[in-house]
Length: 145
Image (cartoon, rainbow, N blue to C red; front, side, top):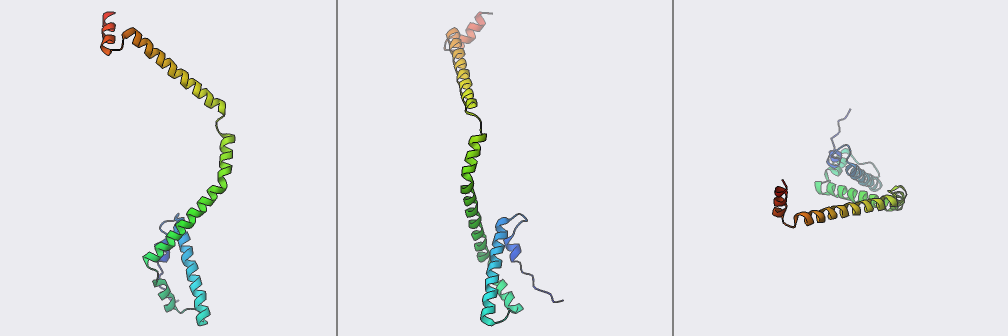
């Protein structure tokens, strides 16, 4: 059994088991490799030799591999954007149908306004009784004891 040289491109592109961007980048690399193989076979009339395959594998610098990752990131972003655009009407419709009813929002507003009004009335009453000075309030409380 002939030993084959290890090609680290997968490990350079895919950095974690859930690295979707890396898997897409690796797919782009494999597409480039397939195109190179087909072009080589058409040009030379035969499959590439092991040394030609090694030379192909060595041509991928960190910069070119990063370009695959950036292309994958752009593709994922474009896909996510298109899915979001397709689903926005459905999301809006569901939010309107299954969201909180209007009467609950009105009730919350009324209760909030009444609560605020009660607090203001209590504050005005306390100011009337004790005056607008904190020391007057303390003196009034001490004087009643």
